[in-house]
Length: 232
Image (cartoon, rainbow, N blue to C red; front, side, top):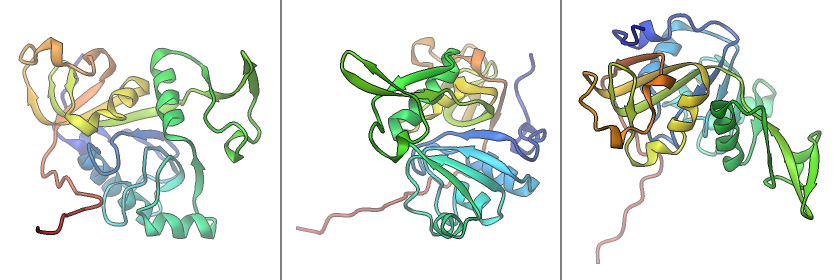
């Protein structure tokens, strides 16, 4: 199977209107910048995006929101995006806010081939509305379904031509889980090496999960909240 693509435009070329897409990363760390830019350029519409956050106004998924490409956001943290807030309050954007652990677990369940999981997160809150609750050993749990994503788009530090991926630090928070969960997984990497060059002990995502891979470029690596300490 030929997995290597020339660039982001070719890797995402078959993503159609109405697709359900997972986008990896944590905050603005480890997000698939090149693929997001390519999706904006392609102009695909009516997307459902599953992501830890919604980017900021001029970066990440925020670029897609600005172009009105996103129909629904499924996220945990969305507090840094004014355009997201505007679209939510005006009714232009459908939003499903879920606990961060539940987001990760629903990704994991999809990757493991599990249809659903039970979790205590959200019991007794608005999160539980309309969901099945079951009691185990005296404690209530919510039934949460595995995600069904057409594509998972992730970003790694290094990858090889067989699709094996290595992430750096915080980028490991959601990328590995999402890489397992898409029907088609697209990976962009900072460095693409020949098969056999990666230490197998350091591989976080085995190539069996990755369908397309390319070497990205011009990564901005934006800092979402810069905090500095006063001198002295």
